[in-house]
Amino acid sequence: MQVQVGLLAQGLAAAGCDVVVASGPGDIDAGDVELRRLPPLRGRTAAAFAGALRGIVGELGPDVVHAHGLRLAPFVSLGMRHRSLVTCHGVDPSRAPRTAWMVRATRVAVASCGEGPRRLLLAHGVHSRVLNNAVPAMPAPIDRDVLAERFGLDPSTLVCVSPARLTDQKDPVTLVRALGLAPRTSGVLIGGGPLAGAVRAEVERLGIQSRVVVHEWLDDARALLGGADVLALASVWEGQPTVVLEAMAAGVAVVATACPGTSDTVVDQVSGLLAIPGDPASLARALERACDKSLRARLVAAGHAQTADHRLDVVVGEHLAAYRRLLAGSWP
Image (cartoon, rainbow, N blue to C red; front, side):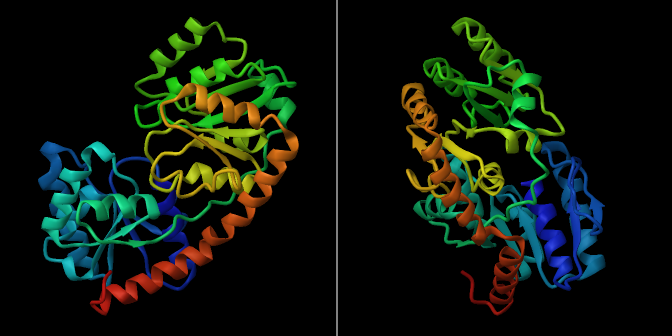
């Protein structure tokens, strides 16, 4: 989400808007856009967060307050609701009923970063408009053979990269098991996270240490993705995954699970291969299919064409139109 906030801020500024980003602690690349820091948003600091946000809004008097993440809906509803918009970047389906109830109570205008989140919110009574994510510019890819050598992988295998935090949402254990069932593949999981120990233990249990590497986050993860044969994801839910758009832009085939969000971004058999969420055998079959170079080339071509809808200038134009609609009182 931070990547999208930074991209949008820079794009809006380039389009002639006066933009200020107000963000809690954490990395966010907003370029030359002014960045104001907010306190962390936790239970005990919620009041301080709300006060700091109101202070910035009161000082600047913006035409639009655009929040990212549904948990911010209650905060932007306080005295600024009629000029506020909050974008949903994905919702855990198990938490959707409670989240939707909270958002409905605030009566704040809601956007969704893709059809998956939009449909999920609508099922719980929240109407929203789709505002697509932008695809970031990709760095020069690391050479495929250099990538394989760096992580001790066999370059004759299908080299898969998964730059994703190791959390329940990303279901990395299913990915590891799928790689274990697909002997012509190798993989690097880059991201670290609370499941790192469990993921490494599963790699050892399956005896696939020579084919699967688990690594903490790397600053050149996006360049590594660009050098891979395949982006592999096993998520159980997503919003509109930036990493999928990045892979498409970099000319890397996408093999992922057909979870909400991803299945609305990837057209199965056209711009990627989709498998059943939580099913290692299904994902392994998709990975084995991706060993076919000609199939990968077709997927890459279609995926790259699909990114045209996610160019930053296109996404900025969609957002400006949405802001005008918001201020005209015709949302959604």
